[in-house]
Image (cartoon, rainbow over all chains, first blue to last red; front, side):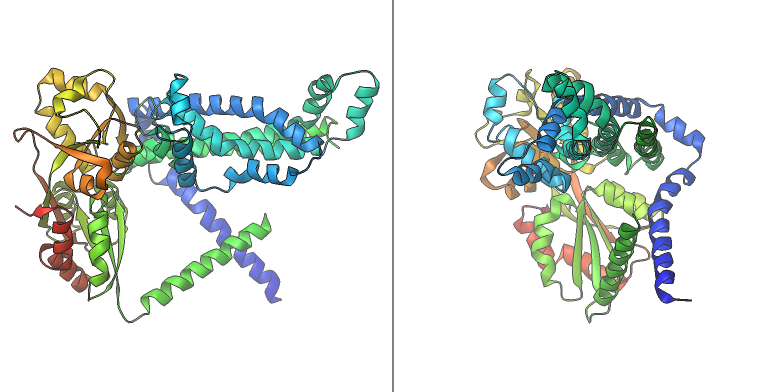
Amino acid sequence: MRWFPAALVVALAIALTFLTLPIVAIFIDSSPADLLDSLGDRGARDALWLSLRTTAAALAIIVVVGTPAAYLLATRTFRGKALVVTLVELPLVLPPAVAGVALLATVGPTGVLGGAVEAAGIQLSLTTAGVVVALTFVASPFYVRQAMAAFASVDRTLLDASRTLGASEARGFVRVMIPTAMPGLVAGGALALGRALGEFGATLMFAGSFQGITQTVPLEIYNRLGTDFDGALALSAVLVAVSVAILLAVKLVPRAEVLGGAAR
Amino acid sequence: MKRSAVLIALVLASCGGDDSSGSGSSKPRLVVSAASSMTEALNACSSEFAEATVRLSFAGSDELAAQIRQGVRPDVYAAANTKLPDALHAEGLLDKPVEFAANELVLAVPAGSEIGSVDDLTAKGVTIAIGDEDVPIGSYTRETLGKLPATEEKAILANVRSNEPDVKGIVGKLTQGAVDAGFVYVTDVDAAGSDLKAVELPPDVEPRVTYAAGVVEGAKHPEQARVYVDELLEGPCADALRDAGFGAAP
């Protein structure tokens, strides 16, 4: 047998084992009844509800601001565009702890904009709003990047046709670009959702940890590690289930849309 | 997709190689899991440890205990209380622990703060960070608050804005100005320099804070680990702990 294909198969086998075994272990380390049991308590429900609310809020902000921003970046050329794109994408590769420090240095109580934020009557640190800020910061590049690619791949003649028919650019954006780019936008939204749901470091550093206020599911998992490992497993299992759902959505939705005759 | 899988395999392989070359060197590598509150002191002294190269891992004492329960085997476990080492000893995971240092729970406030006593924490609008109840600093804090009149305890707990997973988190929230006050060890206030000042607690509510350490069962280097624990009582690390403001074990 030739060595190279064999090496590839071995590498894949190692990678697959390494990546799937820990996930499987979450489910075999404790019984489904125990898992459900630990989800029943107040702390777990508070954390799940908080994660749901903050993630939804972050995603809404990301989509509302990110969609037009990504459209601009995808359809215009200007000096320094590469720099702008790089800056927008930077949080994508930023370690969460750095994101936490960066947020503290900007909008934290002693940060450069901290005084202005406080003067405006906005309380961010140690509040639910602070969690939303942290999630939005770390998750938005995932959406913007994907949305940019989606807009860029839309056939420009579609938009031009709508313009020749007398539609304004705003109308073309809403009626042509967004529907055509929808599969990419959905995929970007799903990725951002996944990233926001899993956020840990920046949230803990910037927003702290308080049940029902700032203690999201990942923080609650960490919190339980010492005393209630089964509870930590149960909450982890919920996040795994959500992640799987997100991934399936990314993989299945675009295909359906493409078959509908939209892209390219 | 395939390319990334190969990449991960490569990274794995390189990590493994690195590890084996480390243990192959002349000095053994001693892994010490220690409570966050000892970060500065143990970082300062552990390079002088003659028997081994010391690798320190700092976290909340409860996280470190959880790691040991999940099968992680450091050589030494040094906690910010006696309860966790005693529990691990009872479970057969730790040698008989020895008490090696004492600390003092204080109220920490920013240097310019007007808060001068625990009573000041009951005012509406004061924000407080404390340790999570599972971590020693958090249980000491709750023990102290429990000795206060019930209404006072309730008012203070109502002002708590964050339950931090370790001491570093509380100090960080304080130095960043996110909260007005926090309960930490006096050694943490010293380590934070001039940013923070300590407000001593009334003697009748002050908890007894004793640190204990032991050799982990199944340690790779039990002999060196024993020496390290002994030197927490007498030696460079004992001196570093005194310098950092820790008291002698009672």
